[in-house]
Image (tube, rainbow, N blue to C red; front, top):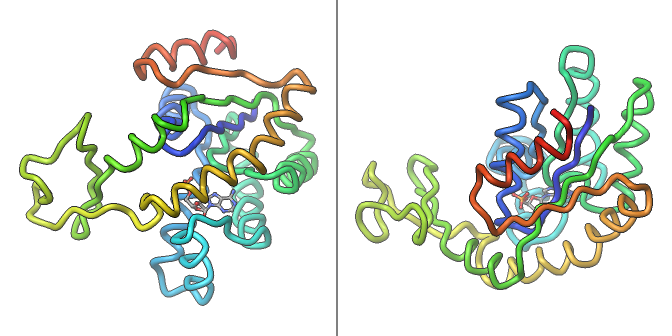
Amino acid sequence: MNLLILGPQGSGKGTQAQLLSDKYGFYHLEMGNILRSISKSKNKHADVIANSINTGNLVPDEYVRLIAWDHINQYHSSVKGFIFEGYPRSLAQYEHVEEMLRKFGDRINKVIVVEISEEETIKRLSSRLTCVRCGRVYNTITAPPPELGTCECGGELTLREDDKPEAIKRRLQIYRTQTAQIIDRARQEGMLLEIDGERPIETIHLDIVRALGL
Ligand code: AMP
């Protein structure tokens, strides 16, 4: 079974994808994280990728497609299925994934959308702080640091570049325009699973598990 998990930034889709992969053996492909780590590496494309991420824009399709192909090609025979998080984000990317899976006689089985309001997205993202030294992530509302502005390791805590208001607005705009088209397509094809993301993590997880019949 192959799943897509979508949702606005801060919806908790990453947490849900991780729970599903830990418990049911899906291969969790988290595109945002992969791209962020390339952007900080010595890869010759690091600057292009970093620039897209920091401004809240999509990284060009050709990079994303190659990364996805690399993972699908390498792991499809050894895993129970994929859970694609934050990818695809446009209809073109959706069609690429379908095409890649088709090469292995496989397909996308369900599209999960974790929904939260725009106000909640902004609240959650602007309360997310990352340590510049160790990378630990805090949330000033739900998981605050022991001391304001400082990590447990003593490092300085900052807002991620793409969690700043301008970039958040751009990311939400892309979600509303491009990613929403995938949701419409999945709805028409009877593959959509809509989940209310403004509830406790475990409740959401159980809802997904039940709906998927896992
Ligand atoms: P995320 O952590 O999922 O919000 O992703 C962070 C950033 O990575 C996004 O704002 C984009 O710049 C980039 N990114 C993640 N997934 C994709 C994708 N499927 N296509 C293009 N860019 C992406």
